[in-house]
Length: 169
Image (tube, rainbow, N blue to C red):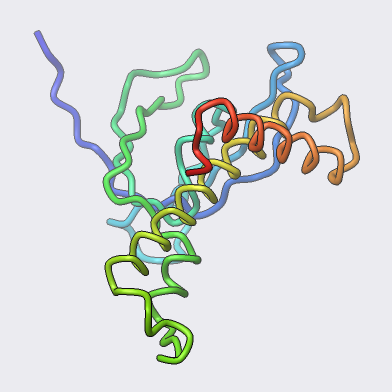
């Protein structure tokens, strides 16, 4: 018989820096704070901390609206949750683009549809780079301490992906 559960409507508030797992060598987790939207803003009851894997954290962004669906308990008796993104956070680039008015001299030859297509393309590329950065950070954290080197690896992953999959068009 199926169990009826009540999901928690929440917002991704903070995605922390990766920390080494005490249980699995060479594995990292990301402390992540969710805010229960049914609780008073700023209250301790609204805070839900979860330890997410690199794969899990690569699928969410700060500001995303999510449903935390109870999925049993861990060995310590804490409730585990499946995370369902219900409303992705709009990237700051898209927000800035929509709020900005561009002088007609600069854009007279560009239609509104083309401007929206450009903004969507840039937003998608930023998401791809973010994924490459998070992957590089989780795979090389502890091996490489220099953040510039992590950014270089992320950029290499990004450029290689763009080239391999023909995303430069």
